[in-house]
Image 1 (tube, rainbow, N blue to C red):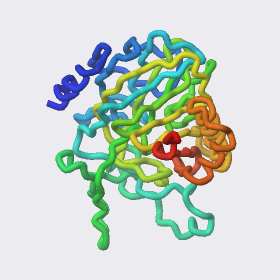
Image 2: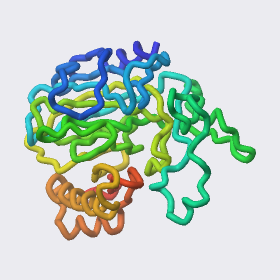
Image 3: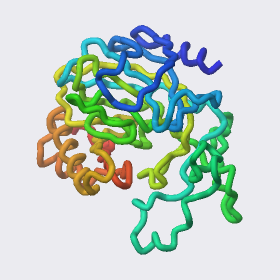
Image 4: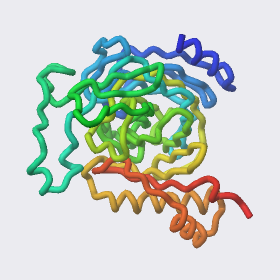
Length: 331
């Protein structure tokens, strides 16, 4: 039934609608992988992702861990120096369970607190053979909630509203670089930004002909920073429409939703401290405001100083700077 709803909504798009059922999944944002589907700007794709461990909506293992990617999608007319836009009309959970890590990553803690941290081990083979540090979550598709199945707290229900997102969205990385689906960069990648939800538009720079777009790593819910090292990992049904901006020459990903424009400073985790990505996001926002919005440089500085909001995307990697759209109202 859900797929028919997707088709009805997609029929409103100006371009062609493609119902794509992937059989092969990749683990790198590489420009030499065989193209899954060639599409045009304005076209809409209806497809799905499998979870970070390789299981689909029917619990069938379709790929090996970690973060198998759906794609690549070749966008006609996209050339190096351009940018593509990806508007996500649907990001919907399609199974009744997910999983997460059992313990916060040590990268989220101070050295002195690590000495009293509980062991990472929970139960052998509970979620995946050979792993003992993963725990199960129940997903209520009707009520759109997630609840930890086990272990059970004596004090907290650990039940929350779901907010489905995609951890991996990116194009083929520049040059002959084939980064894994575990890291991120200027090409996007495994950004794990919890604002990549239904209704947003993500803009990505193009480094190879066709851009070669990949998606994956669905999370039913994830806090700011992904401090546990996962979200509630699950499979997703996804619908998106692509666009093309010629000669955009962007330094990295940008995001837009109903309320904000967002500059994303995306980098591999642990490469450098978050203060570097704060500087990258701020510098890109200044460039965005002064070029596309024609705001004076000094006014852009003041706008950031008094209206900007920073998001920690991953605690050991990336940052974002958000400017409210209402603050961009003209005199």
